[in-house]
Amino acid sequence: MIADIIKLIRPSHWIKNGVVLAGLIFAGKAETPPLLQNALLAFVTFCLLSSAVYVFNDLIDRKRDQIHPLKKNRPIASGKVSSATAIIAAFILAGAGVVLALVISQPFLTVSLAFLALNILYTVILKNVVIIDVMTIAAGFVLRAYGGVVAIQVVFSEWLLITTFVLALFLGLGKRRHELTFLQDSAISHRQILEKYSPYLLDQLIGVVTASTVVTYLFYTMSHEVQDKLHTPYLFVTIPFVIYGIFRYLYLVHKEEQGGSPTTLLLTDLPLLIDVLLWLASVIIILYIL
Image (cartoon, rainbow, N blue to C red; front, side, top):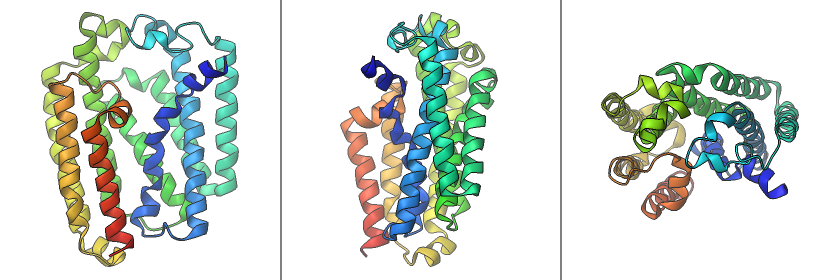
């Protein structure tokens, strides 16, 4: 039972909450203990809240998950965890997250509650609204990034928030494309919104956000305001890692027919993992060593 509950809360997906630490890293404040502590607490908060959302989502989608070739093995869909147990787990996780958010600060609590409300609204309504569904997912990542900023009370570049949004859109659209092609005839029965999409439409949308992601990150690294604040003109060195990461993900989606879980890809695709680690290492070297 414990193993099934751990699987239910999806700890492997907590890596998504790493975006909470972006404000700390890109503000050049990772060496400041009080700010580092608050950032880590914010990370834990979003892990708790996102796990509560995962449980709630699995409860709502348990019937559809049962007909999915992979999701049918999830704890609730497979019957290994009862709905009553899942509801209790969701309330405990959400309650712990809210309490921890309040400990950090009132403004951070507001962002955390907005994140929780947005994801509940997505699960109940917005995931069935074409285009809005992936935009809502992307907005959730922006709230994570903004929450990390609020937790440590630093000034954050709007360009980085925009980059977070379009990158999350890119990943979300890639996931939709994989679901549509992987599930084929059963796609609509699993996720009704897929009826509104087509591979061609998704390819067009992905093309737009791919260019947008590269351009916004380029603007961020080349911004004189950012360069002056961070006291370095060398962030542009990290651009090739971003471009390769995007191209690698597109390759995996189109040629390897992967992309159903960007988190799984990051952890299992060695070239992509190495690229992300090199990007992170280059950012740390530029901001904290040079």
